Length: 311
Image (cartoon, rainbow, N blue to C red; front, side):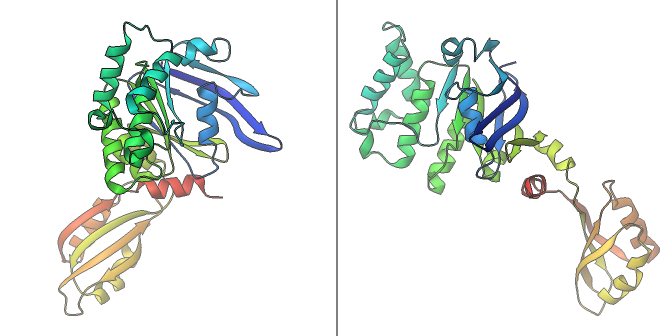
């Protein structure tokens, strides 16, 4: 296991930021820490990286206890805070060389580490430029390069695409996916698309608690809202409305179609989790209608997120 967190707690005055959470991350996973603003994501990351000390709980990184052996554990972690601490007057290579000295990387190994970080983060075209002259997207890449410079097995990224334009966001997401092929990655975000685009597994936080955990498919099954079904039926809306009462545990939510009996688009809902497609099909057959399309609409991650984090 690359990361093991148990019963982690942290308060700031009377505000409970993290309230007894626990989770684990396997080697090679790309995991998203998803939650609204103020959920405790950044505090959790600062605790895991050793920047903050918890009131209680344990954190183990690559089998090294963070609280007891903080310096040793940090050697296994690459960390990119939301606002990357960059020196804007330094050139890119100068800053990365400085980061290597801070990490106490063997001088003989530094050229290799620098070359790998620059290539991995696609920084070749800006290596000789001051960081302050770079675009926000390139500055974020420099931040990623410093997090990777010592080649850690675990990379922790706090809101890595915050403040970027759509093109820069796509570039950083692609970069994270490539890095995820070689390392374990944990990234925090409040953006659903980020998780869907990059992550294999999701941890959902709200008010300092973990309220959901699993793959995207597993989280979808956690939804307690309505199941939705879309059907294209050759019948008039009036006929459908008159007969929908014969469908057990299904309700008519929406219908669109002409009164002359041509194709109607129908949306049905159910509070039951089991699939109702067979029941809908049999209902259509019994009424001697033609069925052009029938599908169960998947619950989106956004719907699950809103359901799990609602007040």
